[in-house]
Length: 281
Image 1: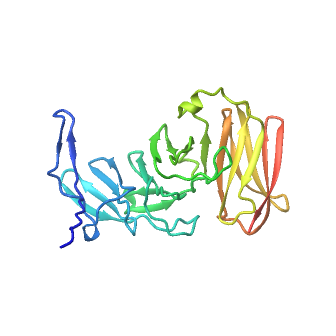
Image 2: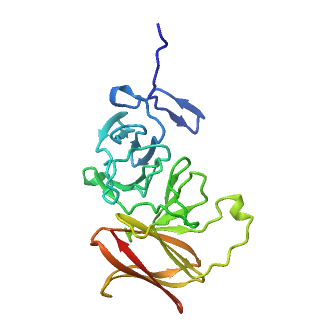
Image 3: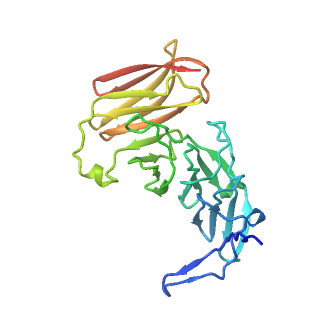
């Protein structure tokens, strides 16, 4: 008789005062008792613990009530992000954080998915702006092993993991951009002097279909302004209009509310200006 494969969904609690672990909680639920795999993660809001189940085909999302010691399956995270159009599942690098009222989630697994879950709205999932595919070195970079999220200072903070030295922030009030931030998050960066930044604007990919990433440098702290115009020179939208500290930044631009054609991106900072032609296919 062949060896039987056992898969466990154990759920533990730790008592800090007693410095002991308890195992007498209800086991984690799962379809056909399948184990929770890479990408599983939990966060607490009030008296409930919300859990994303890694390795699940349908991005199962569960909630555990601490008071009643019960698990309930709630609305699964959609497989298709509105700005991506592909079926993506939770995987290695899935991470969640909370501001105490809503949950922010990335799917990891090399995907750009970025979501918000609102428990008070009957389990509403909202697809947010996608995670930029290109970092400061203008090379492809995506969240994977080691990716993590945190909420602090009214912002969502992201490290992509995946052997990258990248640190990003998302401002919920702006709802449209994730910015790249230079930060000393590795000994390699800490040991190097702060680089002198030049005025720079770059867009990749270009031409683009569903989304593209706009990378730009702010040489010295000051007002940064980036606007998008159509081929006739009519202003379509203002992408950046704020005072920024010196550094390198990136924002994501999707094709939402845009038609196929030629556009122009104009970046202004102090006396510097630069224009780039964009093509939406």
